Image (cartoon, rainbow, N blue to C red; front, side, top):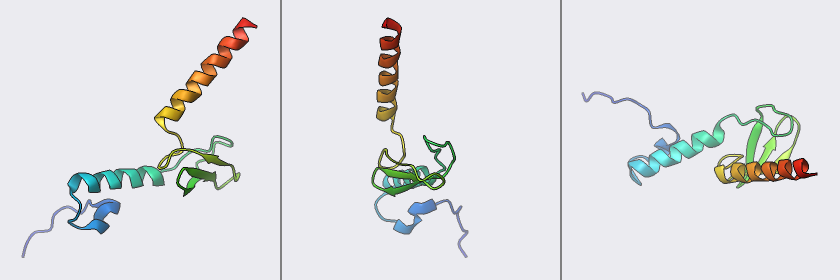
Amino acid sequence: MASKGSNNTGSAGRFGARYGRVARRRVSEIESDTNDDHSCPDCGSDAVDRKGTGIWQCGKCGYKFAGGAYRPSTPGGEAVTRSIRTALAEEESEA
């Protein structure tokens, strides 16, 4: 009898031996990141779920917002938010 290896395929186990190790690992990482708990930008609770591609909604307060395809906030979106915050702070300090 052959010994059984560790069972750590995760959500990409449904692909079996197809598509290659790197692609299956990437799919597994994306799906685990999508299904993690995300905090709501409106009420702060960890009840945000993905409703569609780039559409996220809080299950507690019902706040619906646009975000990334696989996570509510993307690195590019966070950079834009920081830039806007900095520009507004500079504008207030000049006034």
